[in-house]
Length: 253
Ligand code: PEP
Image 1 (cartoon, protein in one colour):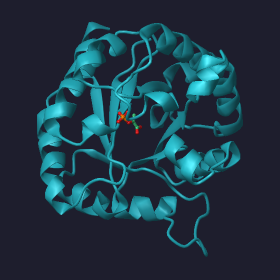
Image 2 (cartoon, protein in one colour):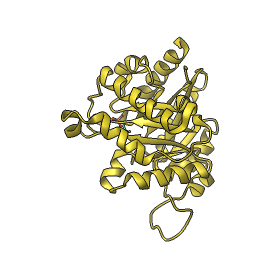
Image 3 (cartoon, helix red, strand yellow):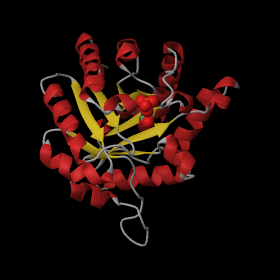
């Protein structure tokens, strides 16, 4: 089944008020494109201002705490993100799994807390280079999924899985079409096992050095329902061709 594509940008720790002009330009340029949804996951400091500047664009966070409230210095709850106007959040990005030692159980709790509060979720999984070279990529990602998928997902269009091989993030070296195809088929199988037919309607995004030059090929692959884009999402000039490629792929069915 062809799903509308989702192209989400992850700005990481980039962006101040002056960069809202890129958010506005991305919103304006992508507004007329059919069959593709665009979201920007911004630093916390920009979420509310971006929502005010471009009410029609989905603005997200890059992480969420699993608790509703409490003594968690430096964190934000799902209700706080909703209050700021966010409509979705990333959970389990490899930079958080590595730098903040986030476990699969924690990622699952974050996804469940976000969905319960009405936030859409992009749940990230991916293998290291050592695991890929040892031939264990599919088993590793499947184990991550089994341990981090939320118990229930509600509307499948509010929940996405992003396959992001760690070695492809920010390196300029994307996974090959064969490797993406194999992994996304395995992710789909796990989603159907977990959620039944609704698993066929969960979008599976590829992330890792997506850019204009490789996006057409990636979006043409089976089970690639969009992309999570880091570096190339920071400017309309780099991001728009990726969004257009997704729209063209969606239109081609
Ligand atoms: C990411 O951080 O999620 C990502 C995919 O980054 P990049 O596109 O820069 O590789």
